[in-house]
Length: 258
Figure 1 (cartoon, rainbow, N blue to C red):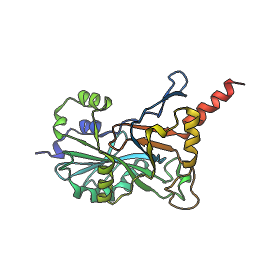
Figure 2: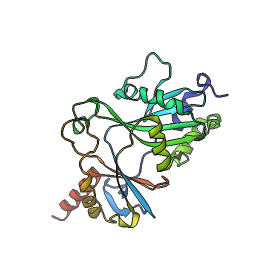
Figure 3: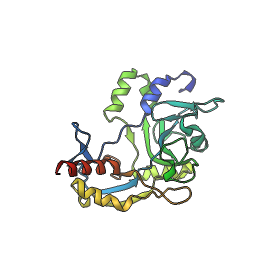
Figure 4: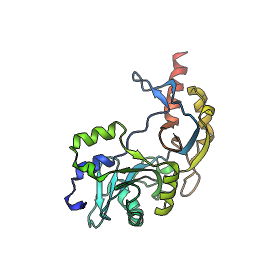
């Protein structure tokens, strides 16, 4: 029987970290700009807002316990009196974790991880784009893993994660779990066929322009959106298209032609 008190938290932390999402157009290793090498999507592509906050995770365990973490570290567990206050993540996610704990992890794997964007707080750099500084939460992904992986050496777990071993839920599973946990998803902006995405950097930047304003402002005038996350409905392919990357690349190109 799994018991959090006896679990190796280093392994649990490594197993449940969220991976980096690759850029939609490949990055040039020489200067960090974008290359004319887009990711190819076959069939439908779902575009979602890339909310500019900080990643949080809720780890639901077989014994009914839960953990809350940032992208890199575990910050608290169910029943803790004192928690790590980093970036306001625990305060923003504790209520969601308590409600999500009723979901359990059966049927979705023995460890179920909800990934959420915590944004809008004055502790975060981009808070002014979202309102007056109050924290808000949106769910953007879900992952499952077998609990017996905790018997592996921590180095093997890290390699498994870094090489794409994590199993993420489809769009339907994600939507269902978000509804059950009582939390909204990051905004769904569009669904188109992959062949309709612009192939070149300049065309993709022009395509993104219509989504430059956030849809998740908590008050006041909506500010700028960080970008768009592109994903297939089964989540087998996922990439990010950030305004900053496209603007920097095109600006560099303009300078080089002068």
